[in-house]
Image (cartoon, rainbow over all chains, first blue to last red; front, side, top):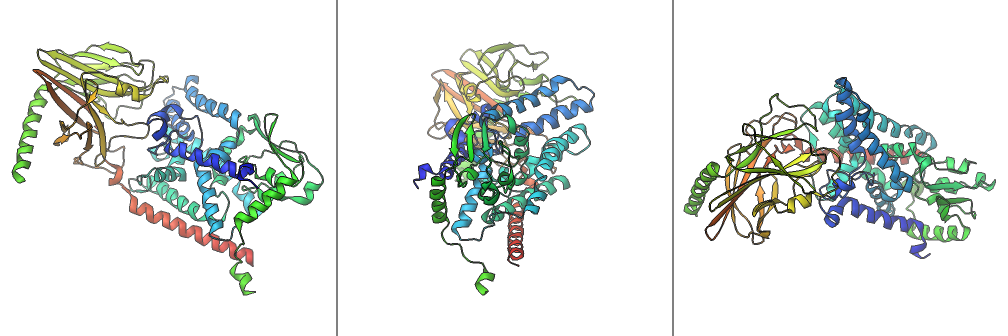
Length: 342
Length: 264
């Protein structure tokens, strides 16, 4: 299969370009461009990265709640105009979300790309991969992204602004975000990899951040997208997923019940895409990577569409070629120790 | 070697004494009530030291020039209706002496749509110290880190020129630009009382003073800014690295345990 026809390869190229732009972009478009572009690409690219060309939307959101809304409510000076910056931030997010939908996650996010690259390294090192997590475990993990959004991005900053919590909780998601460490390290800075001893609150948050980063480094080698499953951006996207122009659609056939290859291919283990009889199968956890469409063996059953324009439609010929390419890439998997013993 | 060092220090001290008397510079007015709250749209007050008779102006990001008046030595900058960096400029011409003092002030308001690069590059005086670059979101000048500037005279780089650095904490240093007019300043670690945490420490001030002569005309300019205690005093990178390794070990443990369970 020619690489330019392989959707996964095309996506990796886009991810690489997005990573270079988001992490090192200021080198090309100017040091202060991030101030202008801020919020325009609401993925996890961090303001602490000295070379970034963009800031993650979660930074202004936490600050506007923690520094603006919270103190104003505490002082009894709440006016609707205080909501304007928050609505502007969310508005920018929604406009771009309408244009690209959850493809932000699967096509642009630097942390998502980093995890996928680690996964590819794990494959090449012949490390035994867990292709699909246990459904019970997936169900237990799923609410975590809502807790991350509700607690770390909204409630804790608001509590801090109201004076009910310390300043440590003014922007708690940024304090634990592995992308802050990743993008600053990629820009040659060690200053975001630290344990903060100034207070017990800061110390706990920095321990969580560094431990989480270490966990992702190892888990990504054998497990698909470990952090994406708990990312608050996934939850924020999920809130607006019905308004985006990029759609994932399915024309259910009885063959779907027996197949399930789409669910196996899904890096987020969304098994509902296999069982769903709905037309719109864009689930809250979906990152619009398009793997389910690639690995659907039936013609026209699944499709990735931009409004009404099809981007990729499932096709048996493509499926065969894509499978061959995947097997060639993976090579022979090393048998596990227990299998060897047997 | 020692003699030349002593000569250098003596020269620096004497130059500093001179410029401290003669060169004007901006600094923030002391806050009346401790920390001063968190109203980002409140007017900002600055003091121009040694600035008697100077013309004052605020240059907006567009750039538009707004004349300012000092009241009892203080200059109050009200919101201009746009955000981003503004340049606070004082100029004074006395015979053959031409002076300027520049300070960049961040204002919160509606987006100006202009890049701070433009206001930095905009020629505000004949002789100028341009930050290259100035701090942006989540950035500050920190002690024990390098800050880079470009010296410009009539818009052109000023190579191999001496600049004086003095800080409110008492550091005086003589520095020199390179062949391309680039000045790299290692901001001194000169804070005496250090508390753990960013909020517990107030920033200090540094002033860069540059003088240059052309014929009988003497040009002097200053650039002032605040700088903060380096957080490395309470943030440990080695401990951070150890914790990442701990996280990796935990990840390895989880992976192995999950695999063994699956195999069973």
